[in-house]
Image 1: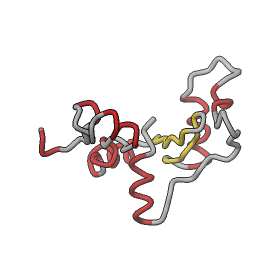
Image 2: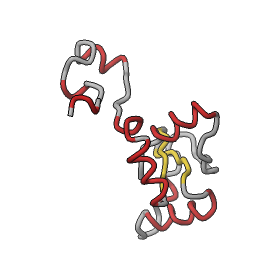
Image 3: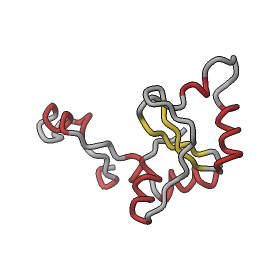
Length: 114
């Protein structure tokens, strides 16, 4: 599974987003798809990929998660759009606790530092 950061940020710029899987419950999201049966999680994700394509969005609890099931999309995520995926979300809590992102664990990731 990949985070939803890549497609969400790239899609907002282009105006298109990966399809959202129908049947989300208010608090648990799509967690019911992974429970009740003793099967690995790739089985229901593969079935969803057959219906929705190689990139789609599910909710784990209340958090949206982008699922990437093809190697072409994964390559695009980790080569072309790696800066979008590797960045950390900026929240008011992190800003206050880290003194305006001055602490190492809260700093934004930049390639020029490497």
